[in-house]
Length: 437
Ligand SMILES: Nc1ncnc2c1ncn2[C@@H]1O[C@H](COP(=O)(O)OP(=O)(O)OP(=O)(O)O)[C@@H](O)[C@H]1O
Image (tube, rainbow, N blue to C red; front, side, top):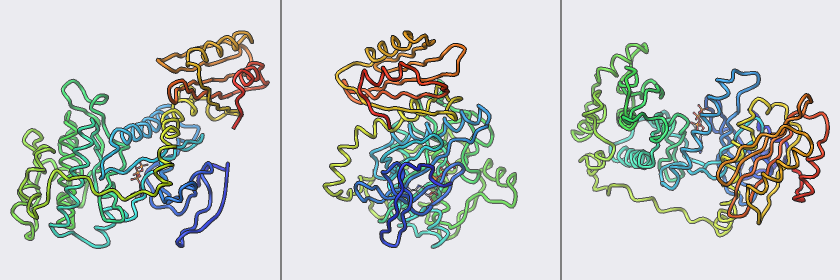
């Protein structure tokens, strides 16, 4: 999937890495690091700071596609973003640095994990010894417990989603299948959505029962621990049904080199009965995790010292990050007007200060009515949007207002179907003296 942004292009090299296209003038994209179902992950470099990052390009579904598919794709990327935002701040969760969007693609800018994934390490170097597995597993469980504490259940814990940084520390990634405690769960705290990768999926999910997603994550972590230390999966079979049967009965054999403590922990995690399965918080107390005298819960790894430029840029970009993430997705990309996105012909974006959102929306409404447009207003606390339609003519536009900070608003106007330049367009520009981009 080539990056689709053509607003700026450049070419440069650094440490034998070739960077070609620049994404919105901000990130130079290099080679492809990996691929997912609907995404491609590029190595990239931040043009302003020179910092190397990973850019996950998630393509919106091609048109035409069913409204259900489009909605599912949108939900998935929105869910991943919402989850990443909630779980930020843990040393073993991948950091979300920025979000950009174009009409066809959403770009998540993430910390670059230079050590590849635990899966590739397993394939290249084979199983880990217990001390090494203890370190990786402790970091994983610490990240999962942190996510649970923030109301996020990963639901796709597997070695491919455990990345390694340059020091070999784990970074949990790919929250595209996660569940939120306050959204997907019923009043009983259970969910019914089946997801995850077959070999790592808990039996209650396969049996299509309502399940506790926290307990299902514990099961998947147990499969990861087994695979790390055995070098193969606990439940495997030539055919999928055979594997499902083994998972549901919880039938597996530990290799002879497993210590007693490791066997005990794995049996507690791979307990097919969720009610007796060990809870994530109890794992930290298990003797296996204390064998090398390792302190638990894991204290945050010493953070690499960022350069002063990075610190400055991070402070400056705090605001920009706020603008970029959901606002671009839910406003600029027109979630409310998704059917029109393919025909956008014009877009303007400007920032106004010293005025509240309601006044801007009132002004917009007035201008639209003066020109005879059907005006629909959507107002929410502190922000909102106005949709303009010319009755009987081909013209649709929307203007969204979104707060960036106190008394600082982002106003974005999109013209979707247009045969003429509306007067209100010019008046709007004159009112706020904004420039197009
Ligand atoms: N931050 C990162 N640093 C380095 N490599 C990464 C990073 N994120 C992802 N990758 C690489 O890209 C691959 C795919 O990424 P990811 O798992 O996020 O995609 P996916 O979520 O599986 O895609 P989809 O949700 O569309 O199925 C990973 O297995 C890994 O090899």
